[in-house]
Image 1 (cartoon, rainbow, N blue to C red):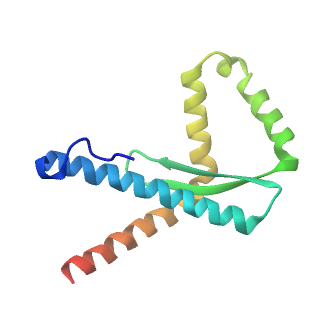
Image 2 (image 1 turned 180 degrees about the vertical axis):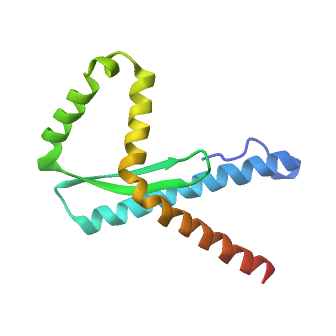
Length: 132
């Protein structure tokens, strides 16, 4: 996997910033995948796990692993189809996506405060290590 397009010797400050952002995103993806895998192993079979992350305009993240019981899938699929087949949503992809985003925020919003606390703690720990 290539994170940078050119050798580090020829990097400018802008290249370094791009690299740091790309590396940070890659690390986050691996950490999310690793966390998901651990939770799947702990939960056992009969469930499908999906990690959902949504970033709000203010930078707060909503992040949670959702478990879908195999037995509940037909009911869930029916409810999704019924909702998306409503006249207002039926042929409007942009509106469907906006609906999904707002639904995710509403359903998972109870985690927003916890997530911000985690972010604040991580920043504080980083600052203590740097300025110690």
